[in-house]
Image 1: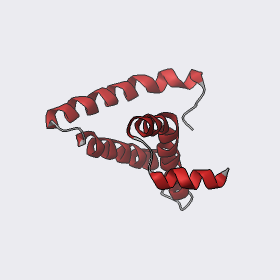
Image 2: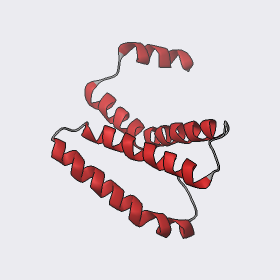
Image 3: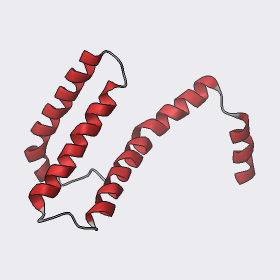
Length: 108
């Protein structure tokens, strides 16, 4: 989860904000909405690799599940906190898939 102690945030936030601004700037230069994905992938990949190189003598097996789990948790939390609501709004706006309605009735 992204909930670190508030005392640790000021040392990280300026650089995170600057990186996000750079990604948005370069993304806009591409001129299409999906351009940020490659830029984000590149940035996150480099951050992970640099941490491994600078914080540890060498990569170890346990780093793999920790990193993969962290990345999955990031995606899951973002989906839960933001995109579930988006999906619900779109379902209300456009109507549900009929089979989902039937399946949900079976759960009750």
